[in-house]
Image (tube, rainbow, N blue to C red):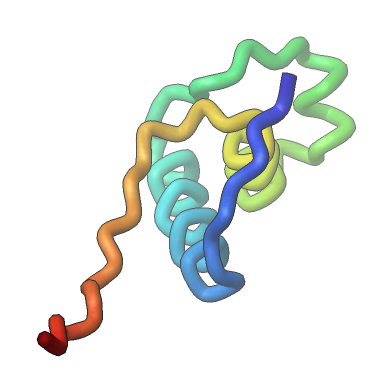
Length: 71
């Protein structure tokens, strides 16, 4: 079951870019993909990172600054 995430488009771009760079540099994949699936994705690190993000298996948290308190 896929997780629904609530990231801004900028956060999504940053997460996918960072993970794709890790994959391109030789980091292990967090998904178990068959060779046929990798062929379908053309071994593209960006597409693999997108797939990992949509499956909700990336161990990434986003810290957003809170607005100042007004009392």
